[in-house]
Image 1 (cartoon, rainbow, N blue to C red):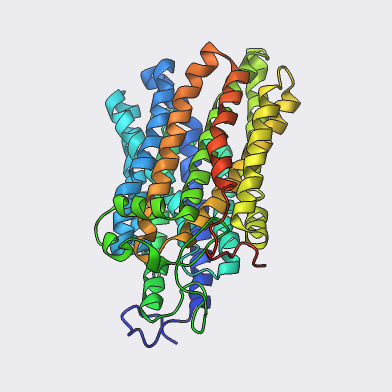
Image 2 (image 1 turned 90 degrees about the vertical axis):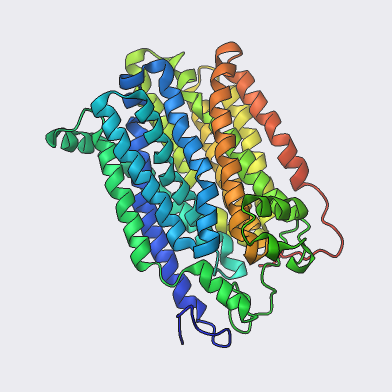
Length: 459
């Protein structure tokens, strides 16, 4: 057996040990990077309010979201040309520079430097999101969703642990002479550098480059030597077509960037559904979740609202991540489109329950848990469906396009939700979020084209 990527196509590497090692490394770096992202975001709003004022603090936080979305473009190019390892490390490196700039902004009181730092800090989120795709480069068809969801689930550790580290990191930073609230960003910088270093040193061989080597040998990277499923074929009940029927996918993959991903996604019904599921699910989640604390503030005294907000959002985060492996298992057993439809149902239920919660904190909490579960279903099933619906040559481009649209959808939802909340209230915001689900529902219910491959029923 050999794992040297310079080996000829006649001697492809053994997939199983490479995939096992890849998953272990990705799981570890997701925890490290997830803590880095969350610990910064936990105090980012407070630091922004101290430097720029409360009115601008929301825009500062949005900068990290936009930065993560825009970084999908260069990260995708690096991944396409050189593999997952340098692409993920680059994203974490940019996030580390951003964290350091935020510390400098806190020391100098510079608002432009704060915006630039938060924009680059989004690199940590970009790396966290891209890592889930690395988990399926070499995954077997009946394990793709489960292995992708495992990497999503690893984020739970960071989301739960990071807020508890924030105060400790702030005190440690103060002991080192750092300004108040900047210590967590210094911690984030170290975490991102550690994650980047682990990936650069240990993610060998690169899963995407290994998949390409197998494809060159005429072996499906998903099934390994002797596999019978054609590389890139999928279907998930949404009308997927074989890669050979796609318009110039291979030539598009050579430097055409996200345009190549867009051309393939536009031509592939299954890929369109995957991208739409991820983007719409994220848009609805951000819109309803972002204004939940404001809604609670209107019903609780100032001294009581923070503990309630913390509890409700913790339950929401648990809904997003804690059951991701279960969602992945269901997507492998029941099919991607079925789980996407289930996610759509939970998103609609969440909008209905949260939007009519009124003074009931319990109803709002139930609505936000459903919102998290709906997001998890659309994220895991949609990402898996997209990854298996496009040929290897343009897969990173399509995945980068998906993350770009997801980030922009979240930024748009966060920006618009505040205005809707101010002028119309939380019930109207929830209603509009439910309306936004309608196109995804229509796309998911679209009949499968006769003769298209269909793997959704495979157990």
